Image 1 (tube, each protein chain N blue to C red):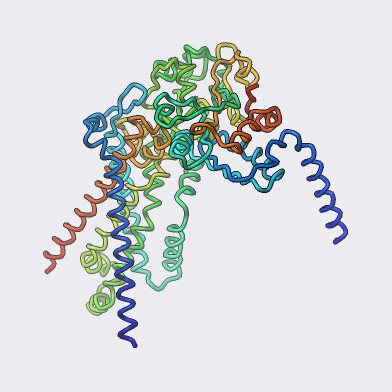
Image 2 (spheres, chains in turn brown, red):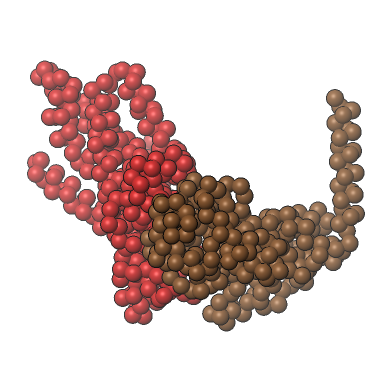
Length: 276
Length: 287
């Protein structure tokens, strides 16, 4: 029993050593740095940030990276008030935010927004015009778009959502969303709501899509991250890191690392496409 | 020695009381401080309107206020008969296993986190609501009220039960010696004499319903509209705060968060004051 334990730990040790040797190259800029990076804001960013932080902190234990959520709005406020070093947002900053706090933005990934329905829904494709009519309430039954004869159940996101913003701008052309639409507070809640309701329609980050919901082909283009990055699927947004003024050397190195090819596998792993 | 200890206990209690009171005043002060620019900038009129559509420049939070009132009243109305029934059962079957078990269950219910109620309801209450009524997606006033009623039920039961036990003793002995059955005791003696407790319990339950954000956020649908039926989606002030808190901090939508907070505070203060007033009136009538 003990022998096995020793063998396993030896193997693990070797594994970690190999890993750190392999990862050494892109991380070399962290070699002589120390200190803490505080990160807060957009929740879509967190998995990528965590992977990067783990790699950096393993390479150089003198660096601490703390990551919190809160949403895009919280990210802006915290970085603006100087409470954190990096505030993440799933949307571009507003003019008011940039001028008030003097923020700088660093995009690193592309995330498409897909229109989703229940997997059993016979509707597989819609035109942008049909989606606009559905969300504004002009079309209220599925049979108007070659579906069942049931009522359409509309789901939208909260006003703070970066996902809502890009959907509203690029699909709805800033058109109105019916007041009776149910509002859900996160991508996860959107998936739960639509996955349960055969008459539901909503929209969410492609990174969150799985088998429990079906993405709708929009104007003949399937909603995939590849199509979003190539520009064929136009409903996409960038994920940003933001700093107040110029970053410190440590924060600068972190941002450079996230934007470097070394971080691309991490970004892909979590369903986004890195911006080259 | 005992005197000295008593002095310490008294001072300790005083300190605890003052801290709690100070915390509440600090809260009110901060809320006022943050909504100060709003109160004096003339934007207030924009907030007190019936239309919420921040993308088109409408920032009315009155639908949310109506939503909060409707949901709290409905859930309290639903919880009230159930709570009264449970208390009557526990009183009339005081020494049975079943009533002790019931009391235990009610105690356990208070310790279940709100998010569990919400989460479970999303999966087991929303789908049947959608199927049975076939009006909308099942996220509506009624769904939220049912769950919220369940959530505030233990608060009402436990507070009222405590009053009954407190008032019990001699009243029970006298009414028993008059030959009243347990049910008669409950209806004609205990209930009238503990009516203050019942009002307090209801107010406490109501205030909990007003303040809860998780249940309406997860179940009420959050559409900022005036509901035409129990099956319409509504948004409450508390859910509104949770939804809008993360918006652009320079926007009018963000300002509405502080107005909502202030409005919630004022609503709860008014209900409590009203309850206090009712209680005093009742007391003087009893004398």
